[in-house]
Image (cartoon, rainbow, N blue to C red; front, side, top):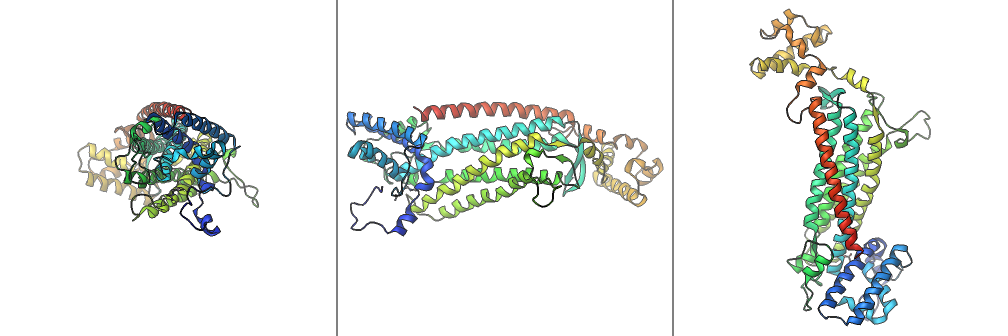
Length: 475
Ligand code: ARG
């Protein structure tokens, strides 16, 4: 069914229908469309804009349709243009012409963006929940390795030893920022557009704020032209998803490298690995690689919507119909990736011995010599120079730093005595990194404890928001 036609002498060509049609992808807005129709109906009824008896039968029919949609007994058909027209067909099939009464004061322009906001809020809360699950998997894994040293890298070169728990826990911080962005997004997205009509508002007494509250939104639009054209919340959601994808891709990259033969630090569980059709010995980290690979489409979806919005005239333009597929795709992608990566992280074991052995390699303790001298008030540039000379001497004589003699140390710098060997141990280096947020294991344990407590708190907040949303939907 289409919702127009009175002024047309000819129906649309098949190719025009095919291009216009969105019901095959916007059908997933159906539950939100029905719920927002109930809110619109409520204001029509409250302000006497509809016969009371009609209002009651329409409400009953909307509820029936909601059930039929959820069990799949009502669905879109070939002749439906979009979700809104399909559901109006459903109403008129039940009620005859009364089914068209809901169009009073409402356009698909304010309707579609209200539906999409509701859909996005509902699914964003689920994304947030999946992120907290991944975050707790990361933190619990990190807690297992707090006291295990490993080489820390810059430029993928051994830099300084770190607690491997510290190395893992860093990912939880990135996801904490994503959760923060989601929270911020939720408050900005909580605006209803109903009452904006096609673009200019309505001559009917629609009380947009009443409808907004009915739907659990914090506020209603301030400018009806902006209300029907604003898709910032779509672009912002897609940016958040691109960022989450970016964070997932960095986990993917690490897991891929760490499970390589050369590193052999990570033993990814069989349940999160795949084999090769030709090489029987292979066990590949495909989940990690897909986390890395899927980040491409998440970025692509953001770029696609920003490009569609750029230079678009205000109010409604049909280009806006292109907001949905990229958004849905990003949600779907994350609903696939997040659980798999949570499982992969939770079930990976790391080779403590191998990491500990590698920790001091590549003269990763050279900074300790410089810090030792700096503590004796040697200007850091000279201290750095002296430590560099120690490394050069070791390299040319195939020794480790702690194997240099007292005489050699003193020859390099008069303040460099044999006691420097006390700090030339991995444990000494780790335990001395006591700056807040540093890698000293005692601090890492504390960092993980705080992050786990925040994770629990966020999880509870999300659960109560999800509860409120589902109560609103079933009201
Ligand atoms: N299906 C459209 C969309 O997704 C909503 C319909 C508005 N159409 C219109 N011709 N005003 O954006």
